[in-house]
Length: 111
Length: 112
Image (cartoon, rainbow over all chains, first blue to last red; front, side, top):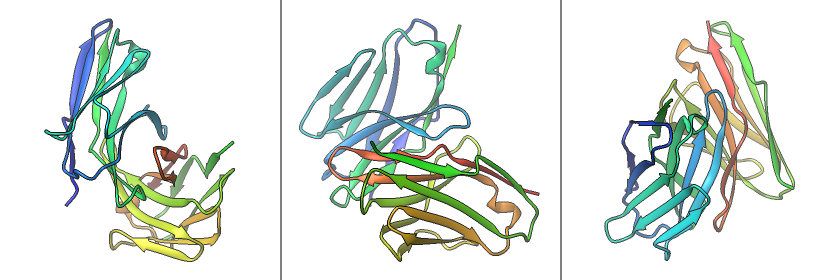
């Protein structure tokens, strides 16, 4: 079955890099996603990566995909207090009609 | 452009009262629609999804129901709320091929 796992919590200091990790099980996933949820808000799509890519960079965000190990990571460079949020990774399954979400990683950025 | 509207933003309801949360989508036709619930600080639980008008799939047995009376309207209902129905409810629509899901802003439901 499909399962997506993330660590629950990450704490970093402002200005440091953050790395949020995710493992998934569905090898047929086409796209993998990272969402950000700020307190009391819905989920916002941050970035996604196509499964035939190893890396995608978008300003301070770098997504790394190791398809062999089914491991996805999100690196946030120069982490700011505004980056404090819950981050969810997700994989698509069932021909893209359904996303499976991880449990979310709460990122706390200390000044 | 595509947008999703969800209301109300917050709701406090007594135990045993009915519930109706509404979600509407603009700018897209025949979207897949989803209702999720999120307990405080926790992950997402898929409640219902719909691939078309009148087509509802339920992921977990519960005190809630969903309906899709129009292509871009998705409603979450309950006849009698329980304390355990409290949570943060999120509506989303999906696009195939890299678009992922777009989420509404959520409804914070507190059953007292």
